[in-house]
Image 1 (spheres, rainbow, N blue to C red):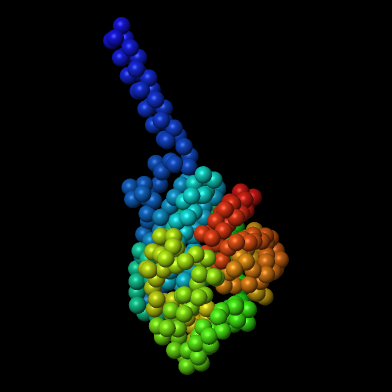
Image 2 (cartoon, rainbow, N blue to C red):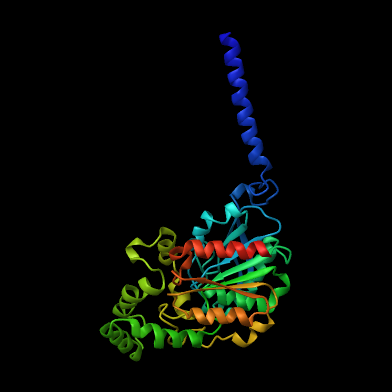
Length: 339
């Protein structure tokens, strides 16, 4: 009798293990058997050709959905895809396939030092080469661009929208001059008067990299408009992304901080508002109440895009994926499921 009980017990355990194994193998979302990056856990280094040579950029795939593949375009320029890691808590359960991607000069990608590479058009060509390298097309390809990544998404769509299924512009307006006006005339005066006076003094002297100038912005501006928490309590993915920032690239294209675009930064005159009407694919714009950029401007963008929708994050700032997380990710997922 004891032998029979042991036999039955082992049989049931074996069946349980077999069923569990079979469940994993037959899950479409978790099936990587046909992926060329199976052996690397989804990581693929992609060659990017430029006028100054060929470089490698880092990508990492999560999930498997032939009909919905989202490429994450991080901000900065010069930050990393690390701060998108909050998506791991939302996208897998919605069975969305998505790709982390560190742009050239950022994170785990190559870091060439030639500043001639830091031009918007070259980054657009980089995204197109990444798309080809990952095998994405109009039947499944969606870009999610946050901050500078939103600029990159707009520019990519204006040239290559025939390859897109949809696009998301997160926490980015379509005009840098409007962003600067909002920072100077709306958000700046909300700072303590003595703090704003010091900031303006440094800007008048063009001392944009002075430690006190940067320190004042990080202490008084960032916790209100970049991520609404004490910086000492910022989520680890954000801390890592900021810590791994390529500051030379950021300074060249954006300027010294998120407090507008100052100096002779590459992006200072960028404005595509008049061209939004030419983007025909379904598009979602995301704005937040406490963002560094005007949420009403981001709402207006959705009306200028022929197939535009708007997602408003009432508790969010520039990093709404953290300080208004449920609104942010649930809104994105709802949009993606409509495509």
